[in-house]
Image: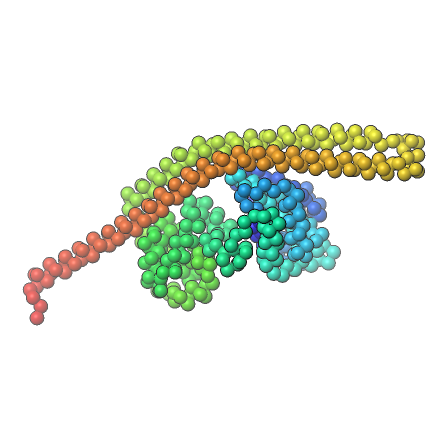
Length: 426
């Protein structure tokens, strides 16, 4: 299970993000512990209000738990993992919220703790939390028998093309796979020994090196989208500066965008737009089927929850009716029989809750199986689109080289013509 945690503030923005149903097919708030507010936004506002009595600005600890795509974990396994992490990080007893998300056939969970201890009015310190999360992740992979990613088994073997949330959100805006981008930039970096060779290797792939406004170097795509070079390389800014030198005197972002604009011929622009329109046309039926499936699955889950709630209330009434009242109830209390009946009722309620949770999990598993079939078709179409766009980027580079060669040819012809007119040199 991939575990990613961060200390953060801006609880209102986080609550909005976690409750988005436009970006997630299913969202369920499973637990709200230790908060007076009934909604996620109210709970995080409460944590923010308490934090104002301290100097802490990052008053929340946000954790995401992502099991492998093929895993079918019950809610109890997620909660067990959260409880373990809570203990390892020293967050026991802190207010927390647990939210489940489902998207593209995958299910993951988020847990957000308040770091502020209301009694001492101090923030819980979280030293080395990334290292501790990595240890829990290894334990979870071993416990469940999942194939452990190389980056978790050995941090030095981590996949260099993994991307952050910010990179993923940027890729959704531009339609560019961040893994492709990272792989291309890192390949150019490995085979280049200086800034000129690196810049040339990037341009062969339709990418451009520039001096950033706030950073030493950035990389621009053919769309003019800007990416920080150290982040693409998984390198420190200082290491990049040592390899490439100072960015002073190198062309800036505005000048680089002009170069891209001149290189991007109208024909290539039309081809890119045609590819995108073709993808949108082919993807439309699949996305429509996805939306219909999501609505149907949401309705089925609501029907199940309504039925389970009716059963819970009916069973509770039946158990309550068995408990003796009046003088008989008093007598049962005296002889200890009442406590036996109450323990029996509690055991039956627990059994009922376990049965209901099993029904929820069975429905979710069935729905995820259907959703996974559709998602495979969507992924195949996306892969085809990514290949087409990659070909167009390579074509862009070839067109630029043709234009450059043509310009060089014209320049050479002009020199020869002038030499003929002036006669042989002495």
